[in-house]
Image (cartoon, rainbow, N blue to C red; front, side, top):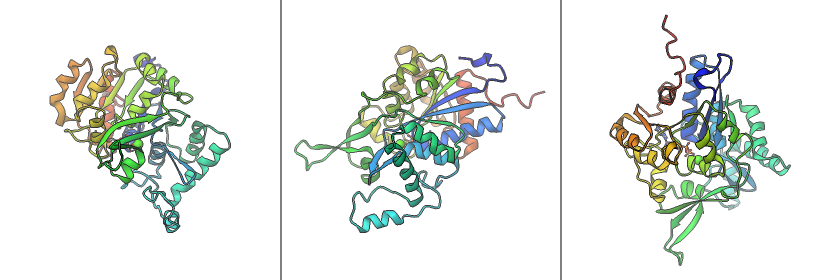
Length: 347
Ligand code: GDP
Ligand code: CA
């Protein structure tokens, strides 16, 4: 750990545990902050891969691709996922053959990414190498690491009156994309996680960081699964870097996504303070030193601090890069690190 004593030549090492859309938008703000202040930094992103799915013989990694496309300028900004200027001919042709599933949005441009990835995996390259190769095109400006090279898949146990047991497990993508998270979820099961190991560089990126950030990503199926990879939680607990998180819940709502349903499924109240308690304080068996809540949740600050986590209320709506950069700056401040650009204009 270097921290305050960092010599001016050593870039600041920031490690972010990210899901898809929420993590990627936060990363845009973080990079905006670092670039606009001329701060030399190396940002490493440990991305969730438990949303990954095999479809039509292709390996699809939604969170890795969302981060890669968003930071590489290829994302469809309005949808928040997939490629800009996308067309859907292949999907329509598959549907014309009656091939299932038809509910997953496989765009023509996006398809090329999955083809390259699957070919490389078939040739024996691990997902981490494949990701590096894909990023050579997109130049996301961060080091993008899959949380694991092993196969881990989040399944959601949903209520189903047609089943004798009254329930059935579906892949997370089916729960979210086909069922729109509208059926009651009873449990979230990251299949294969216990047998998985951290991807190359993941533990080193956490152990060698000056700052570890939990962006406002889904605490259950994004950050939760990353922390579930054996070794990751221990690395977070033992790194000398401060660990600061930003609440993905604002005023009792998940803003966009399905965090509320899944928090309820794992028995966590849908609140900014409750999510901090769920992560826990690092000096009390948890992972956090600091937690930012939205100004709408200022009433939760005392509760979070009582749980042993330093807390501040600041605006947490990622409306544009500038607003999101301010969130990242607040995280530096809460971590006790110099805020990039702070004092630059002073004589
Ligand atoms: P996903 O993998 O695409 O679902 O993306 P993430 O897991 O990285 O992030 C999704 C989460 O981001 C959602 O569950 C929301 O709780 C959170 N989120 C989205 N937009 C905002 C925002 O503007 N502010 C905050 N604080 N959280 C947000
Ligand atoms: Ca995701």
